Image 1 (cartoon, rainbow, N blue to C red):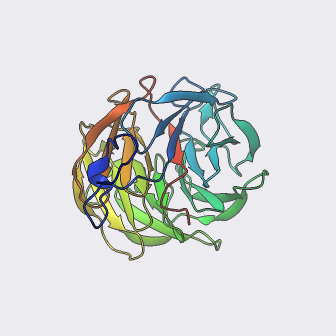
Image 2: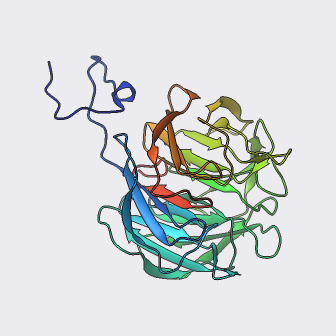
Image 3: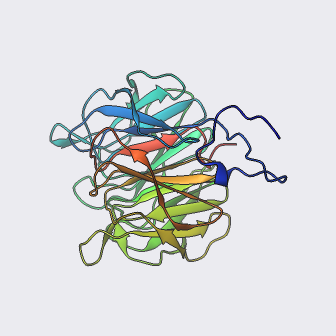
Length: 308
């Protein structure tokens, strides 16, 4: 019998061809900000457990979005000190510490989404006094201000984003509550219609591995939180399909991922972190807890689907 050190708490998702549990890629999910806090926290994506303190943003803000490479996490825009923020900050994911100034997004706004590859993070949508269709991007390895990328097909408040190594997706949001846009991350330009979600919503969380995008929760058209999780195949356009359910309904949540699992954290239901397998779907399971009950956080990981 192979002698793997330790017990992989998510071992049912890490089976190799012989049936033995395979050691997962060591990864970190980093969650930043949220309502009334500047706290940055992290989890190890390969083992169940509660989040741990990572450091602090320079200022408390919410409605920000996160992206990153295998080394850096970046967090852009948001709402701070009673005003929209244009701030972008970064952390080194492997080592805890406070965030460092990176530059500015092109338009100060809150409730944005982000889709990132190994090299670029693209921030989309938001509220700058109304629904915004702005797309702007940064090169993750170098600090500096964001550059205009193009436009979403429609202004989107409280959108969420995810990516493969080539494509970025932006889901729903006010004012078009079920449409999905896509971009080619390496080449600037306007977003193109991808398809529709199975439900109408805003304030969702999204995440992906290299092939599959998941979007979950949000505020439904009734004004109540929903527990739905939708799935899309990123490489091919088309409508989403129902994938499963969160452990409980929530809006204002955030998403991040590993190569095998999607995670959804925080929101109106409190400090809960859910996870589920990209390969099997179904109902999500409890992963652990955030350090506090938070909404409108930004999140990323160093093992998400946009990384090559």
